[in-house]
Image (tube, rainbow, N blue to C red; front, side):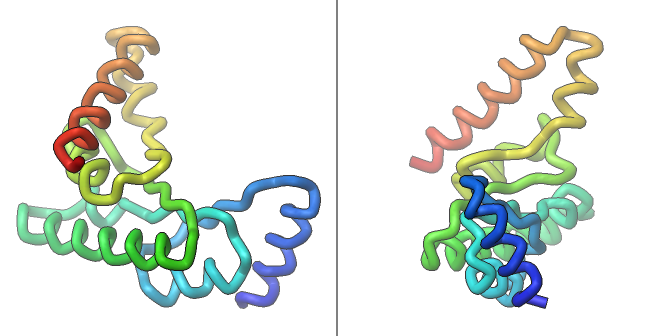
Length: 135
């Protein structure tokens, strides 16, 4: 219910908290996030991460891209995450150009073998290269 979410968003913002809503990349959810007064959205990338085959991944990326575009049109900050890894992060980074990507599990898992600093550095390099290709 958008009214209930809007009430919570408003109360959080009164305390100076920026509010981000984790949503599916669905136009109706983007509209609801905008109506709620949220500052940001985190687009759920799980279906993309779990997609089988190039065609399904591409379809998911198009859906994510449309949601990101719609969110930006209503001045919502775009973030993305869930299921992102070293192998699948670049298309999301280059297509969505999100402010933030939420990738904790993959980085922490890799850090067991390479150390946290190296794991973060490698992910950041992948994202930076993807964003550079997009611009």
